[in-house]
Length: 300
Image (cartoon, rainbow, N blue to C red):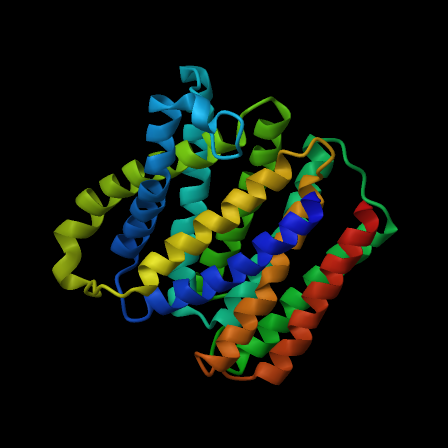
């Protein structure tokens, strides 16, 4: 069941990426990201109130948010810092890069997660998994060749560096999620409160870094896509944490499966954003997905 949930989460993430690209087009990144974290937090507010005012009503459901000790909140704060680092880098990269390049690079995140799981959780790579790693690296090199035809030099483009660093931070977040779930943290506690801590952090970033310079940078404009980003992200993360809460779930498989949502984002790039070199990039994407498939075979 947890694998089915991972695929559902992947589809929602693909739609989330499309709305994210739409929201960031000719728009200021920092306020868009702050509003995303704020809307995500507001979506959880009724559940927080209900869990405190009428706990008996929700206690036996998947929506109940138990009270957590301060120590657990400190761990969740760290989760917020890791995720927000990944998001800030990824948002800037997606704004300036074609989604048909940024999304496949981000989709290679399970490779880093798998390598991290090997080092931290003692998981051993088998022949299938090594094949998946090699295919993922090959797809990255092919994407760099595709990018050159659009004037994107992977070795000198800071936005490529941003998406690579975002991918590394995202892999660290996935490993941290498994650590938290394995140590008895409630999935709703993690998802809900890291969202609130992100909002608080983004508020400080916006007030002290963006607001004083707002007139000299890209202006902010409201678009309904900003709200849709939050809706699809909350849904995708809710199902993701639910999948990880299964005792037999494997973070390497769940992380890999979630990245299959790149197909949805890729199709969106071709249909809605009319991006270039789709045929050539499709081969790059096929290698990414093939690498993910070999990771899945090796993780069964």
